[in-house]
Amino acid sequence: MGPGALPRYLDLGLTLLNLGEEAMVPLADFSLEGLARKSLRQSVHKLEREGYVCVLTGVASLVSRGLGGVVAR
Image (tube, rainbow, N blue to C red; front, side, top):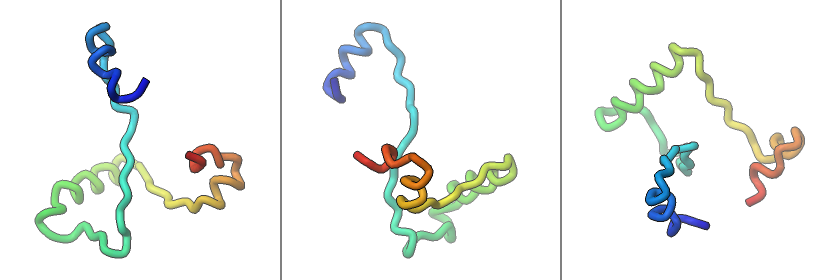
């Protein structure tokens, strides 16, 4: 249906649920330094304390593990 159907869903009494977000970050220029990134730095440290990890995986690795559909849009 697409984003235009949102009012119809809400009229039906359905609840919105955020399943995830996507971002493209130029890693060569990215830093957690400085006052502007303080909140993000705190969030990262909290996640680390709770045992979360982030793994950067190349497309070839996803395809070799049978997850090619994740990158085929």
